[in-house]
Picture 1 (cartoon, one colour):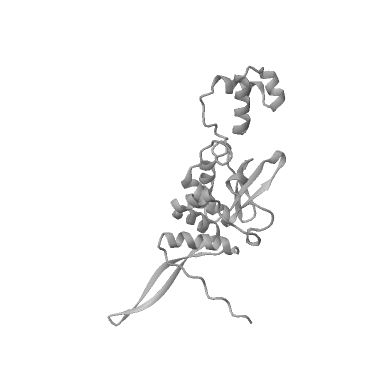
Picture 2 (cartoon, one colour):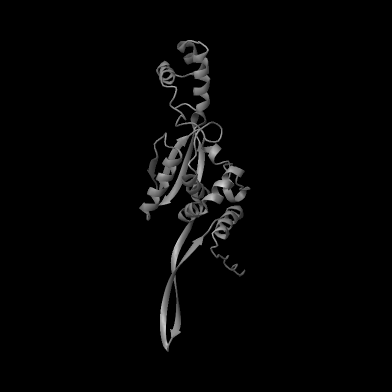
Length: 231
């Protein structure tokens, strides 16, 4: 697959009368691909175009979900030819959440297949693309909790528009749901009440703050656990 910039350069050269053989040698693009671009120029936007540095389209709702998954339990790793692998670690105990993560990746980048790689106790949802760092500028050396995590303005706008999906990604990757219970005396009879409790745990204070901001936007009450006393 070629990025949108390469395609644009090739089309401009074709329009200027340069031969396909010359363009192929200069850009490293096969002549068959160049003929396809020449004969079907109206096929835009190109599905592999980056929505940040080119003219690709970014679906905001799936991206909000995927951003939460990435910040919770995702990472990028560089491979050959500047291709990056996006990995989302998903617990094998929740196959539906694995399906959701794979769907979010496919919706954000439909031009390439989404792989599921089995590991010990978890499944890695995996996708390769040169432009994953464009979509996740929070990528950097070392663990996320050891560096500053801030959202770019365009990311802030997406999260503000879809806070519920951003939270879904965070809680699905680095959260859990438990059942709490309490008792109450009603008309002389002790009754037991059960209710769900959601917990989100992340070592990055910046990611915790992003979670809290979205909870506040949705008017969802939250609190931090009391610190554990020193022995």
